[in-house]
Each structure stands twice: as C-alpha cells, then as structure tokens.
Amino acid sequence: MQTILITGGAGFIGSHLTRHFVTKYPSYKIVNVDALTYAGNLKNLKDIEHLPNYHFIKGDITDIKLIEELFTEHQFTAVLHCAAESHVDRSITDPLAFVKTNVLGTSTLLQVAKESWKNNFSDKVFYHISTDEVYGSLGTEGFFYETTPYDPRSPYSASKASSDHMVRAFYHTYNFPIKISNCSNNYGPFHFPEKLIPLSINNIIHNKSLPIYGAGENIRDWLFVEDHVKAIDIIYHKGKIGETYNIGGYNEWKNIDLIKELCRQMDIKLNRPAGTSETLITFVKDRAGHDLRYAIDASKLKNELGWEPSLQFEEGLSRTIDWYLNNKDWLEEVTSGTYRKYYDKMYANN
Ligand code: NAD
Ligand code: DAU
Image (tube, rainbow, N blue to C red; front, side, top):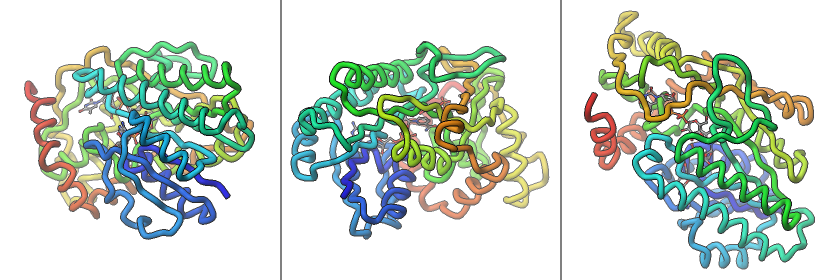
C-alpha cells in the first residue's frame, strides 16, 4: 500500500497532480499538505475532495513539528514535493519568502523524511518537482540538458536551484532515494492569474490592457499542465533513483506572438471582431533581470521512459481559454480582494 505526501496540492500544478494520482490510483492513500497561501485554493480540488483515498491538511512545510507528526501518523512511503513560492515577479519584491518556503521548506521535508525512513530507504521515493529556470537563460540557440550547469538569475530560480542542490546532497551523502524533474512553463486550467497566460485571459475578458514586459521578445517553452503531470507519473513509477529528468513542450513562443495567438482565439470565442483584443497590448517596463529564453531538451525522458507531450499548443490554449470562460466564478473569486491590491501595485506605473 502506497501512502503519498503531496505538498502544495492546492496550487496550479499540485491540484492537477493530486487529481491524477487520487483518481488513477485508488489504492494509493494521498495526503495533501498545503499552507493555502494566496496561490492555494481548495476549490481547485472540489471534484475529488469526497474520495476516500484523498486527505487534506492545512499546514506549512517549514513547520518541522507538523511534518514530523504527519510522517508518524501516516507512515508515508513517498513524497511528491510541489509546494513552493512560484512567481518570479513576487521573488523580486520579497526574496526571503522564497528562501523560506523553497529552501528551508524543502530541507525540512528532506530531513524529516530521512529520519522517519530511518535509513531503510527501499521502496521509498522523495520526488522533487523543479523548474528549467535553474539553468539560467539561453541565447537564440541551444537547449537546456540535464547536464547544463546551474546558473539561476532571479531570487525564485536561485531558491529552486538551492532546493535542487539540497535534494541531490541528501542523495550523495545519505543514499537518500530522490528523483528530480525540471520542467518548462506550464499552462492550463487553475493557473493563477498573476502568470502571463491566465492574467491575459482575464484582462481580455474585462477589456483591460495586456502588459507585455520589454519588447515581448522573451521566449518560453510551453507545456500543457496535464502533460507535465503524466511525465511526473512516469518518472515516479519508472524513473531511476538519483536521476534528474528534463520535461518540456518543444513549443517555444515569443511572448508577443503567444499573446497575439491568444487574442486571435479569444476574439473568435467572445464574438468580437478580429483584431479587437490585440489593441489591448501595452508594452511596459521590463522585468528586472528578465531571462531571454528557456528551451528544454527532453530526449532523455523520451528515450528512457517513453514520454512525449501529447497536445498541440493551439489546442491546449483553446481548451485553457474555454475552461476560464466556463469558470468565471473561479476567476472572479481569485481576482477579488488581495489580488487587486497585488495587481495595482505590480502594474502601477504602466
Ligand atoms: P503555485 O504557486 O500555483 O502553487 C504553489 C502551492 O504551494 C500553493 O497551493 C501554495 O499554497 C503552496 N505553498 C506555498 N508555500 C507553502 C508552504 N510554505 N507550505 C505549504 N504549502 C505551501 O505553483 P505551481 O505553478 O503550481 O508550481 C508548483 C511547483 O512546480 C513549484 O515547485 C514550481 O517551482 C514548479 N514548477 C512550476 C512551473 C510552472 O510553469 N508553473 C514550471 C516548472 C516547475
Ligand atoms: O520556466 C518555468 C517557470 O515558468 C516556473 O518555474 C515558474 O514557477 C513559472 O511562474 C514560470 O515562470 P515565468 O517567469 O516564465 O512565467 P510568467 O508567466 O510570469 O511569465 C512568462 C513570460 O511572460 C516571461 O517572459 C515574463 C512575461 N510577462 C509576464 C507577466 C506576468 C509579461 O510580459 N507580462 C506579464 O504581465
């Protein structure tokens, strides 16, 4: 019987991951620990909260006493560690929050799991979910490989790189059973509207300007969130202990081109004349230290474990827009209150 601790299961990727494991593996007991920060939302899990193999605990991963108690009570056989502060812009204004959750929180989980598993690591897995941003920024050519040296350049990516290093340090020092994956930009339902795609969908709905940093020339490699979750499933079950796997969409878009495609699709879906939404595009002050380009080489994952992205971007984007248009209550709720304060402060001078 597997008992899995998922951290950050009420967030964007975490909620998809939790739903996937709870519904696909009814014999696994899944315990979701989430602090319910501004980014965590139990509404993301409404459809599965009644299932008998799903349990939620509100808690902070930096709270060592709580994490120890949970390990004692549930005797976890694995951890899928998703909880993090995840937004680059917020890391620029509040780096210490990122150090606390991403570095101290990850280290706390590692230490408690190591002690709880008492050096009997057989059949245990600590799976750390990480980002391609640890590799730094690419020029116009080339890809990030698992062997690319780390070169994080924002407080967010530096905190994720630090957490990756701690995870690997536990593997090398204690033979602790880890797996790591580093994924490119995700998109899809339940994505918090501080990030480019859901923020722009929300603004188009409300006829608000679409803030594009700098000249919109920065490039990201976009992957539908359910494809990320399928990759995590395969790595969790079939990946090798101690290994790192890159996950990516082979789907690079300049921000400006992506927003134009979003505008095109939304004009059709909202029955607005072609070109209406594009007039909302506004070039604003660039993000400090803005990484130019990310692009993942995911051939190790394909060659060793057979994973490939399943969805074309235009279709994934269409499904994503439809989800937001059909879930306006969700969008209204998460963009009221503190979100408005964040938005007004963040985009004040534009
Ligand atoms: P998110 O911000 O949507 O969700 C993070 C979740 O973690 C929230 O539910 C939040 O309440 C919870 N959380 C934050 N601090 C916590 C703490 N101290 N204790 C317990 N819970 C806490 O993030 P996301 O976009 O879903 O990202 C999830 C993970 O995937 C992160 O580790 C991130 O670095 C990684 N990742 C994200 C992307 C992406 O494009 N979003 C890509 C690659 C990797
Ligand atoms: O690459 C993986 C990373 O992708 C994850 O590790 C992060 O958790 C996730 O937030 C994401 O980081 P990005 O910084 O790439 O995502 P974001 O949606 O914030 O920005 C995408 C691009 O769009 C980036 O080049 C900045 C730009 N942007 C973003 C916002 C919010 C704008 O031009 N305007 C905006 O208002």
